[in-house]
Length: 283
Image (tube, rainbow, N blue to C red; front, side, top):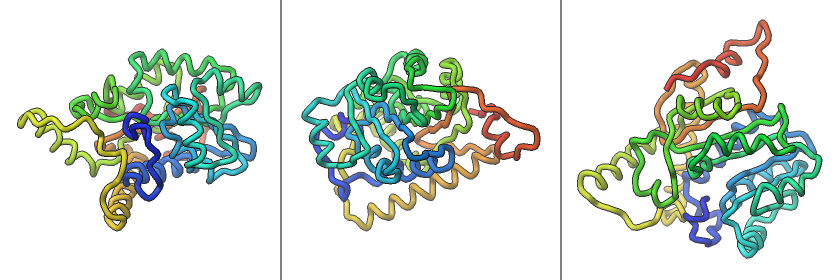
């Protein structure tokens, strides 16, 4: 969760928004599919927010080392998050340089940039800069999520400090300019598009401007409804993910790309699925 959304409050697990819980499960599934995290592997979460997501992933891999970074963190928040989401294999920092010093000569297997680069005016330059750190190697995998479609830009984006929203094609072009190589890029959470369209309709046609809040900071509905919504969103994600494998891209409220810092090699005899990971994405 973005620290702007949480208003520097600790939101307990039972009150997390179904969107956030579904995204957590989606990220864990993608990690299992694309990254082999052996004991001692290092994982870096850049723009970790309140550390909820990375702390939950860290529990899945107790023998790996997790490093979380967010420039909006204060020493007080770092301490509060550590108490709220205890994980012995997770360390939190306020900047990449501090995380780099903690890593020393160690290398990073996976970098998470989850809803981060839309906050950065020069996103390409940031991705290039990230690759200059000595902990990044040719074997580092980077998972990036961003909000989709500039036409959906609304007060929520302004509140969160977004500079832009992306299409799959735009995202692939930006990461290619940064020297990264996409293995898979897809939309997800299509079922949330109607609610965003309604919000845009209210704002642009009815001139209704909501209060400066995202609505994702804390779930105020009952647990049964939260469970249903989470299941719907996870079904949504699985459908989009599988259709993307055969070249069908269904629009969604968010984009995700899995990329490498070095060009993946495709050997003769590779399966069609492996080749699809390297094709040029449409849209």
